[in-house]
Length: 151
Image (cartoon, rainbow, N blue to C red; front, side, top):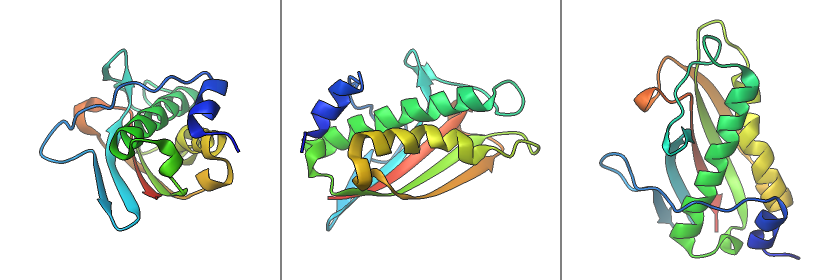
């Protein structure tokens, strides 16, 4: 079995440095054998990836933003744990999609994150999930995702 870092290399993914919290919270908290990651917003070129699905952003672009968040979530997990090989499985993903009332493809947007987690962790990346449409996300970001992992 290859290491998670080997899989990331095969996928052409270099994890960025883990980002700091934007307010009064921590990026990761562990209790027992469970790690909770705070919500991560989509970023492009180091700045919030702003947009509203159904208004000025389409599903494929939102999906790309969710995939980029998955990479940031992995960076936070690695920073918190020291190694992604400590992850036994991804348990839950919750995605918030900044969208119009008419937009109904939130689930497809969050697939950008879920599909990458499957690629990286294999069966251990298969997780429970929720995807919500919301009126706004901090800093106008198009997508925010949080994650729960078992270690």
